[in-house]
Amino acid sequence: MRFDKDLFIASAGSWIPDTTTVAQAAAEGLVDEEHRDLGFENIAVSDELSGPEMAVRAGRLAVERSGVAPADVGLVLHSSGSYQGHDMWPAASYVAGETVGPGVPGFDLQQRCNAAVGSLGLAAGYITSGLATEVLLTTGDRFAAPWVDRWNVQMNLIFADGGSALLLSGRTGFARVVAAALGADNSLERWNRGLEPFALQPGPEVRLIERGKQHAATPEAQGSWERYEAALMSTTGRVMAEAGVSTEDITRVVTPHVHRNKTPENFDLLGFTEKQSTWEVGRKYGHVGPGDQFLGIEHLVLERAVGPGDLVLVVAAGAGFSFSAAVLEILHTPSW
Image 1 (cartoon, rainbow, N blue to C red):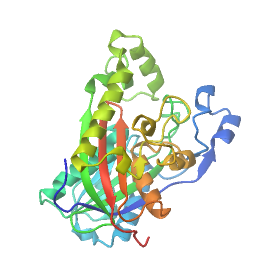
Image 2: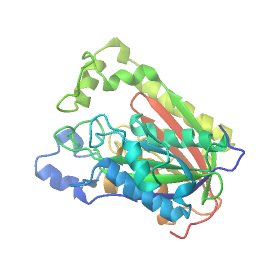
Image 3: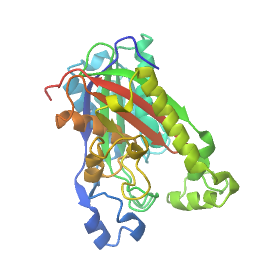
Image 4: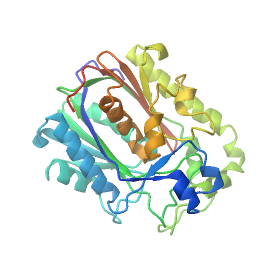
């Protein structure tokens, strides 16, 4: 959808813990052979803070940088892909209360690594309909053992810890949201479910690769990569058409931090170069779940890698499979 009403990104923020080199983790026997050559140099690992606590730190920074009064924020959408520190507990309520106050509704989004960019599209509708002038979007994840073996749990990536945030505004910001789109191919959801029956309680550890191998042996899995690529290209093509731009108009592209040295990266599929991407953030920190894109947007601003008039394409994909994309126009360089 193209936004004819004013819709802006007022600020971005993050909180990333210290990193561990992949080489050191491999020397300690933590990384199997399959995951040692993915292009990641360091992985952010939190020894203390949970995902929601990191989201709060990122959210507070985003609110502070925006200059928006916390009382003006009308909604918090919190995205995550890992355990949030307590069972049967709404992390978004904690994040909202600790960032903008006790009276602001908070909702959790669980659409895996697509959740954060997807939340931008959902928040846009909330703002343009007049239900709020500002919405805080946060992510926060800690992929901790023994529940998750961050180094080897999924093909073509290594999970990293961290929090990130965007403050979306209907009044002012350093970037304008030109258009946003959501997409899906739900026929691909079994790649993360496998063939095991539904359980009645959580298991002791997550086994994504094993589930994927189970599904890969079924006829249903045939053509999955083609379906994934088609849905990714359809979602991205739609948002660019609605924004009235082409690949040649885009200055930088922000995509998930995965499999640089294996199958083609998402920015490769979309027709962009590594230099145009924010892969340097992925190389530095790892795959921070749904937080990759918010970190990428913040990185482009902090590094002064974009300026007034530049167009930025933001793309996300998450197990399910769901997709989202947005086109941003940089209006000015914020002071932070």
